[in-house]
Image (tube, rainbow, N blue to C red; front, side, top):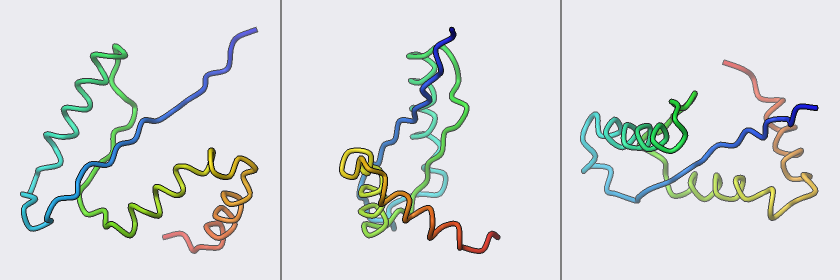
Length: 92
């Protein structure tokens, strides 16, 4: 019997930095460094690589809370509540 893949994503937040000091196109060099290291480590290009400046402290805190839910709420109840809220949101 084949072992089922356990797909995982690595995430990283870096900063903060004064947004007025972020030059146009500054996301590219950081993302390329990560892509190159991924290829070096795993021998293949990542299917997805997303990044971008503009994450506020308030949103970072919310995302941190959500990203730790598997540890802080192993029952999954909080995530179920979030999914319920999101399911009622109109799609663009």
